[in-house]
Each structure stands twice: as C-alpha cells, then as structure tokens.
Length: 368
Ligand code: AMP
Ligand code: MG
Image (cartoon, rainbow, N blue to C red):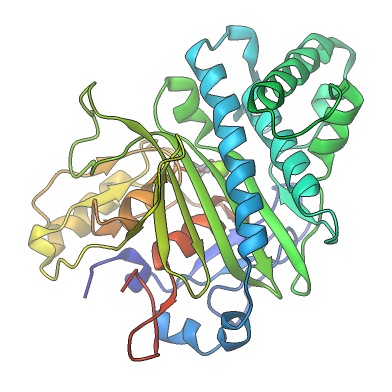
C-alpha cells in the first residue's frame, strides 16, 4: 500500500472566498465538493468513496474532459508567455495581500471562453478564484488591455476558434463567468487559474487546476503544470536544464490518471508509488512556510522514519507528481485560521486518487 497523507488525514476543510459569510460547512460524504458557500472535501479512505460512485461510473465525461484539457492547455500557453517576460506591472496585490497577475486573469478568461465554446449545449456554472472587480477600476485599464491582448494572441496562435478579437468587455464578462456559487446539485466547474501564484512570480512551479463536479462529486480533473519536468522530480526539486518540462495530468472517474506532455505527445497511464516502508518514502509539502507548518511536517516525517529531505514545491503540481509516484507522502498543515479553498484541491484530489475499475471489477483508487 502506498503511503499517502490522503490515507492519514481524515478531513481537510475547504472554504470558499474569505469574504463568504459562512465559508465552511462540513459535508458527510467523502470527496464531496459543493462550491463556494458549502465546500468540504474529505480526503479520506478510498473505500468510503467507492460507495457513492456507482452512478457516476456509468457516465462518460469524455466531451467535458476534451474541453477541460483544451482549456487548461491554452491557459498554460498564456501563462508560460507571461512568466518568461514577467513585468513588474503584471503583478498586483489583492485585498488579502496575496499576489495576482495578468496571467491569473488571462487564464481564467481563457478557460471560461474555451469551456463555453466547446460545450455550448450544457448549462455553464464555473466556481473560480478571480473576479473582475479590480480590473473595472479606472487605473486598471492598461492592465485590462494587456490581458485582452494576451488572450487574443493566444487564441490567434492556436487557431482553433474563428473569432474576431475579444474586447475588454468580453474579457471582463468571461472572468466573471467564474462567479457561480456552485452547490451540491447539477454540474459545476471549479478552477484555480493559477494555483501557486507565488511560485509563478518566483519563476518556479504553478498549475492551472480545473475540475468538474457532478452532484457534489469530483468526476474529472485536469492539472496543467508548465514547469514540472516530464521525469520524476524525486527528492530533487532543482531539475537539470536538459530535463523537458510541461505536464498535463488528467483523470476521469472510472478511468485512472494519465499524464501527457503539454506539447501534445501521447498520454501515458500513471500510478502512485508502491513503496510500503515509510523509511524509503519521500514527502512533499508547500514551498511557502506561510502555507504549511514545516516544523510539524518535519516532526511527523521523523516519527515515520523518513530519511529523504522534504520536496518543497508550489501548487497542485505536488498532486501531479504524487500521482506518478515521484514521492509517497503529501503533508499540509495550514496555520491557524486559514480555510482551504475548493479550487486548491478539487482537480488534484481526483488526479492523485485516480479512481478506476480494477481487473476484478472493484473500484480502486491511487492509480491501482
Ligand atoms: P501551495 O503552493 O501548496 O502552498 O498552494 C498554493 C495555494 O495555497 C494558493 O493557491 C492559495 O490558495 C493557498 N494559500 C494561500 N494562503 C495560504 C495560507 N495562509 N495557508 C495555506 N494555503 C494558502
Ligand atoms: Mg490556489
């Protein structure tokens, strides 16, 4: 059995936006995510998940997966372009003092645009991190124009959509499509347009994280990790320059997890590690000490006999790396008062558990 924090931690509470009046409500079912106001993700035992998935197992989300992969890949292209030549004026501060960049907004608008284009007959609900409030202010007009130009350039070089250029108003509208409250019935997309913005600004790891919830269950997840090497990062976060980077992880309920290079080469099925002995395991945690208590994880790792130093990387790229067995454990201990957000775990959760049917016909998680 693989060693994984998902087996150890009984529940990670998820909240929605900090300004939500009642941001945190626990829900009884494991792997249940319900949008902005009531969001709880119990990263518990796979057996408990299996009980509730038979309905979803018979459904195909192929169309939605295709759309999600397309959306996340295009957003990754935009983000890569911005990160390569990041300008000081591209970085802004939100009211909670966290950074937001033109790429966060551009990514959210692109994902929203592509999903609506690819799935025109489905009712569209998107729970996403950003909103257009700050971009509507008078002093933000240059920034808004830069975002609009980035989106139009990305769409034009991709060439999949015959659209006349988007206007700044189209972009504001696309960003605000992400204002859905979600909920436990119907379908809702969940998006972090750049998970790990601090890593993005530093020039390190980040992810575009997109998931689909159906009746409160995560049924599909896509993680685009433009800076993650295609080969294992093991216990070494500083990859050598000849390592190719850019991974797209995806998982649909019933099908396990796959990884594909962002350049479009064919996907391969991935599996979590088979390591049984915690002494041989390595563990992942946030790069940012403000996001997780490093001293606590180090004490736990010591008790487990883990010998390898922690692998500290930003964002849900951790879930992607775990899903292909680069490490065995993910430890995350936010400081007091912080509530996890639905978009920070929904996609990563299904990517790492990779629910699929085993040869015996039973449901199995963790890529088995
Ligand atoms: P990571 O790189 O794993 O730390 O995850 C990045 C995500 O952590 C960001 O997208 C934020 O949503 C989230 N985050 C921001 N502030 C905190 C905090 N104080 N504690 C825990 N997570 C946070
Ligand atoms: Mg995030």
